[in-house]
Image (cartoon, rainbow, N blue to C red; front, top):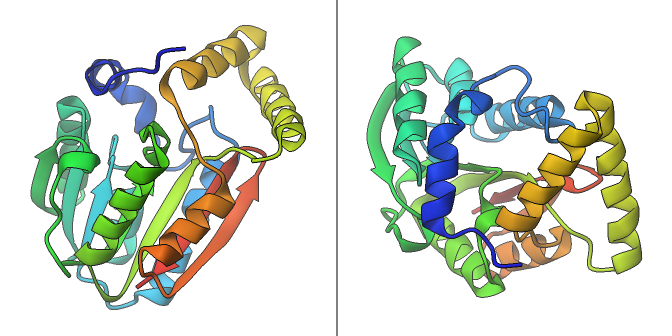
Length: 235
């Protein structure tokens, strides 16, 4: 199947903004979204208690930036997203709570230059699965590594795959059961069709290895359930 182009993804997300603006529950189409966002929020506070700046890659409606803002009210926030509507919604929500959006960039992270050693925190939630080749993952991780200050951290929450097809089948079945419980078989088929069209996830083992190859001193899994994984890396 031919995958969605960046232009098609931009159009899709421009239409779906309100599906990505529940800061407490996250996306119901992902397993353990609330647990993952809570873990990331607590972990950022523990590891980077003096953080002054962050970049939210694929910021969507701004849920992750808002979680960081709760603990760092003076943090300088840079937003990046392929959808202008998502960027505007995220900025609106952040500024309503007194947050400071110092930069807002519309574009694809593959083609956007990030300033060197500028961020204490970089987040990327449900965005990297749109990369289409392993070389693109490597490129993005190297770019993020360079953009972080020494001791800075990178936080990922995303769809992942399993290298073994038997394990992949089992975990996809678990995900399908979850979606059916959430909203029925039609919802499950809709989400699986969207994944087949739009997403090209990688395995958590590949992500961890590539983070270390990019220069990160630490990389580990915070939480994993079926085909979703929260990962952190430290410069």
